Image 1 (cartoon, rainbow, N blue to C red):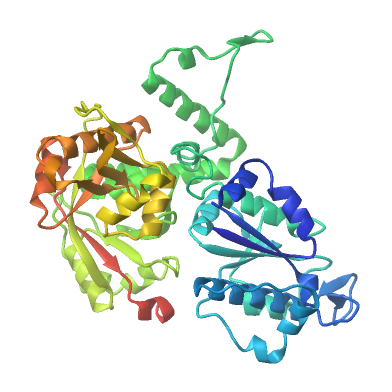
Image 2: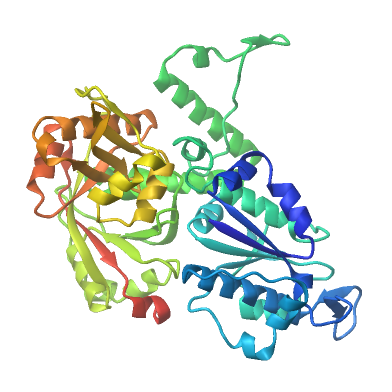
Length: 510
């Protein structure tokens, strides 16, 4: 991921971020920091970038021209880098680059551009996860009394505030955003649970934590943490997190209670709803629309929206949607983030109505859920977590996903491989939205228990994290269905349709 920070103080950005975990991520090439000096793009011979405000008032205002030309330069640089070209610019050359003729060349798609300002929406962990899905992110730092509104209207996609207070400039806020977003980039934290487990009880503050010695200053570590009983430990941590959140952040706790009530209602038909429940439980899911039995939950980390349009019976059979309800679908879809491409539905009538609106069906799947909660025996000696060195093998044998996505999954620490005499013979993983998948075993090792061992191993890892393992099997894949059923997974009564929004819809309708 590349962060482009437009600033008057690039050294401040570099010195503040090129250390600790973010600095190590930069050294490894997981993150790139591009601090762009807005002053390099001014056309004023003395290097000024500010002027008095129209209408009077105290202080100076950053002018539109240098800000726009700095932003425009970054946009072009990204486009040309994507095309395999390289461009460098500084000083007088940079100012010359901003002439009217060059400005006419705009990039083919808008770059996500964040302006840090007290007037923006509050910065949250959900927003950090959303921004972490970008390959390129521009952050614009204001100074003085701010920036000419006209250039903000021209360039900015998001206005974000890190709190209700005023700073001397946007650099500290930009660094906060880079740190919060950067640590979510796969591989930055170095293990599979650091980013997930701290926010597993979504919308709760973190529980108290303790280290050695057991007694310090007359205070003991809580006995439950020394018991070795993982279930008791997790329950204790959850209760302490709830207590702390209710006391310190009642607003956050109220949000947590709303989600818990929804999860409880979805539990009545757990097999059909597990994908929504796991997204909410994991802190990734956000309720964007709820009107009676109509529901839209966005998993911002995965870039997926999950829809329900009415309840199902105990058998999982979806009821038919009356026309008056189906007509509300547009209102429901309008609540989805504009960039959402993938939608998951479990009701055939809803799927048909989305087809009529121009969506495409990517695939019809069966949903399988492991509800027993008991770890499974793994009867294969050498299964281990994959590393970036295994990417070529994985991408060479699993072509349903792109190489970039598979690389992210490996860096996230959620892909595992089976090895025979040191040679890789198969793999499995967990998708961004939480479903198990990406299972592959070489032909000569099939029907020898390798696939079963890989799946059991993955299930056990998910159980360790307090999650309910589930998976989607494409219609017609009877071999995978037999494998899942043989391990005790239950098939949901309703199929799952993965739907894709057409490019034309992305660009204009929703």
